[in-house]
Length: 292
Image 1 (spheres, rainbow, N blue to C red):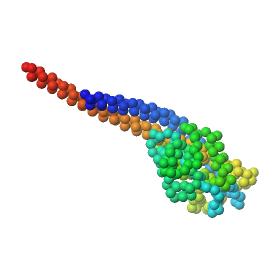
Image 2 (image 1 turned 45 degrees about the vertical axis):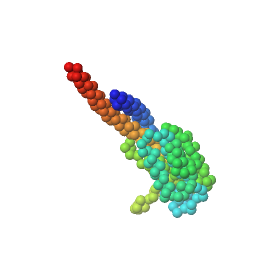
Image 3 (image 1 turned 90 degrees about the vertical axis):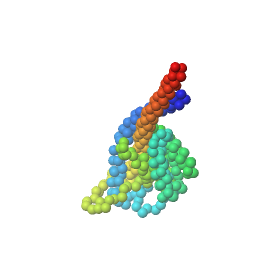
Image 4 (image 1 turned 30 degrees about the vertical axis):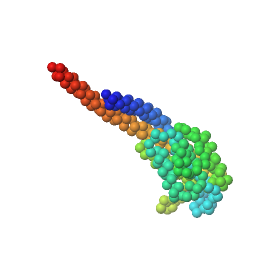
């Protein structure tokens, strides 16, 4: 009797867990749909702005801008800053682990970044770095939905410190959203703006020639800060939608496992109950035979 009672308690506990994980899966699915819409809607703007700045930077000639990286340029003063984007809550599968492993691998190969300023978005990253003994200078709170005003303030602070010589580089470690089935942990250099290296053979043939109006320095003075803000905002949107995908998948897996466990315990309960009934019938028959 005691065994069947214990199994019934387990069946009830597994059922409660399944209801909780199913609810969390539905919530994550709803949030994912909204976050995916925000991430995919902002990507064309960020990509177009990135490509525009790349093309203009290639046609600058002798003109330069402080926010634009120059090949073979002198190292700027200040510490390197690394912004690590993780989640505020857990139960999202390998999401935080993948981002933090990428950050630690980057720190192993870039000692100056590890010795520089490290800032975090998300409590999970703060807890991890505290456990590993790495000091986090600042923590930023964003929530489930990235606000452009908050991102704008954050990016302007980075630009201000960079131009003042307090920091030399700003990098962002985050989960880049590619599709619902693929997300990749990425290290992106935000400041100074670094155009991709020219492909082999790209210099052959005619080159684009630009005539700037207003002049190139004034034009890039507006475009480069906008590009930094746009890329940081897109990185946050990618991180948020990737978190919801990871949580949705993790909660679906937990729900399926709870369902399987419930079926397994139900079979165990039926077997134990059948054995108990057989024992009771045997005792009744044995007693009746003894009286006869």
